[in-house]
Image (cartoon, rainbow over all chains, first blue to last red; front, side, top):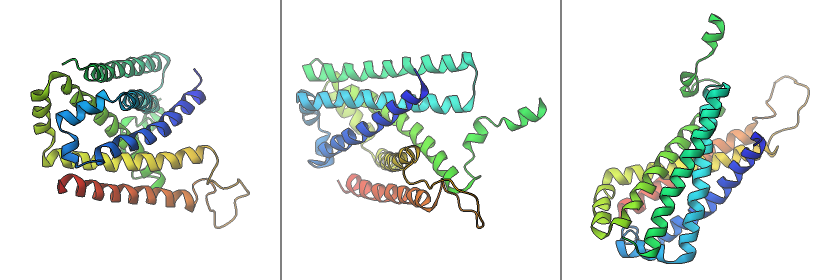
Length: 114
Length: 144
């Protein structure tokens, strides 16, 4: 994929993540912060389908943005075809692993598996 | 070869924010806050995954994270997040040509068209917004 397209994805995921992080924080602020972290309240968040879907989208946006940012930093440090290939595939693998692990939590908590 | 290697500072060059003025500091902070936020994201996803192990595991995790040290860390995360967002929007606008001057013949006193006062002001505004957000965040976290 061309770097110009990757940068557009980077900026798009950034803007999307800003909007969804704001909603995520506002949900915590809708009640006293320590109360919002109580087990029942957090489980209720996962059981509320629109919010769970929003968390999933947020997880994908932040993982793509975060690991692409890390990829850019690492490519600024050093260049070379083997190194660049290693960083590109490594970032993709780490991104996929984080999305899989976070999705597992959202799915299991949402379906009441614990 | 020796000259080429002396110009290759690698991670030391990237970690040094002192040269080239406030723009370099913004570049450095953007990367530093990005790395910090990625580390926090991974930690946060791990932290929240304990919910699937039941109420006891969740409460044990809360005991570990809902401490003064945990709140200081969260306050720093708020600051990093706000700076990274505000400065990121500045960079995005700059890449789109918004807020950067038109190229022209250099005339004394040489004023940079690309990183002009608007861009510099935006960097300071980003830092100020981050500081304000940290103060508000700390008041919420420690006021509980």
